[in-house]
Length: 453
Image (cartoon, rainbow, N blue to C red; front, side):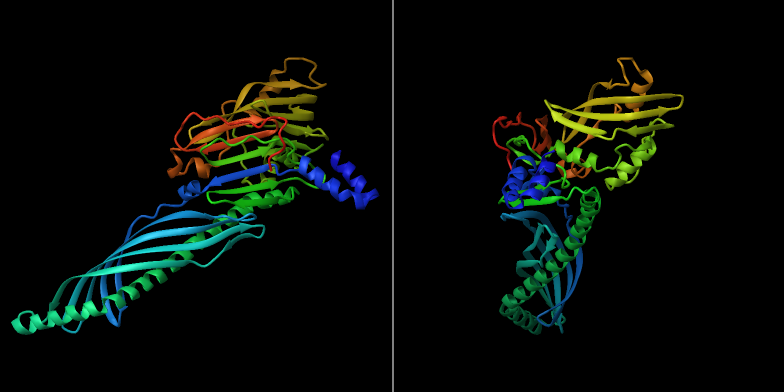
């Protein structure tokens, strides 16, 4: 109704409509999804790099060198403050230990080297997607001569003279050799970082595009991002609504202190998606209903094994599906024009089921609370065991719904995290994960406060 009134105003008085549009967006169409991630959490998501040992065959100062080296490195994320984009450096720090033999004519020099390197690869996420820069690096190396041997060691005077000469030449050329080795470390570390990171981040970006962004576009929700990066936190806010739909219009819960990963989703996000599924007034079997919804959301179709067979449902034209987030609970309401099951049909019924968000370790699930409630003109207060059984198969009590991505809850380096927040209040559901537990509570915004954006 608000959007329709705005459309009428824009058509009749276009010069006065812009301030009104901005006011409506501010109060009734604020971003309805917010995701905030701390720098520490992003670093923990980075894969661990096991130490590796590799053979060495190189030319240093024009002389052949052979041996082996061991490389140990760590990967971290360093956020770069930006008001409009998510910017960060992928930082790789490593140590290189080398055992090498340099042979020149009759002389063989055995040395050990110790090097360090730091690679920074700039990346940013903006409205155009993921933008990747070229790696830059710094490195140092220190070599220590361990032994000198010659093919004339059995000749007392000649062997001693050659070893002394070799040690002096090695000392003179050592600074230049260290610089050349450091440059090779820079070149190799940049090449490896560019290759590995671009491959993995491109795959991740494509996966997000396919499984998250494109389904939103197909639903016509017109995702509008707002991004910000501070020294220790990256924040992404999204407004998901079609032209005729509103978005967030109530204050959202605050995330508790110590939050490393958190998100808040307004009920308008889910309800806007429900309205765009195209099931209003449609007659579908339960199997086809599950397939259609999963395909619309970019998921692989998967039919629950215990889904009742031979059941067809015709949804109401107006708000066939709706969720409400309030007073600590999530209510799902299904409005049905007709439900056909073998010899028994039901008309004009509403099924409601309530869930409660519960933190369990490093994840949060929606646990069904209480029985399924049946109402509507076609119910008339009768106890409908068969109808309740059908709804019970669709919303099974023994199957909690996880609302933290498995990529996070199953990550081996995040197993010591705990849910700090799992609340449903005033149109919002809020989830926050942090470090090992301290008793913390979410501070709720006073109802009279302005909407946080």
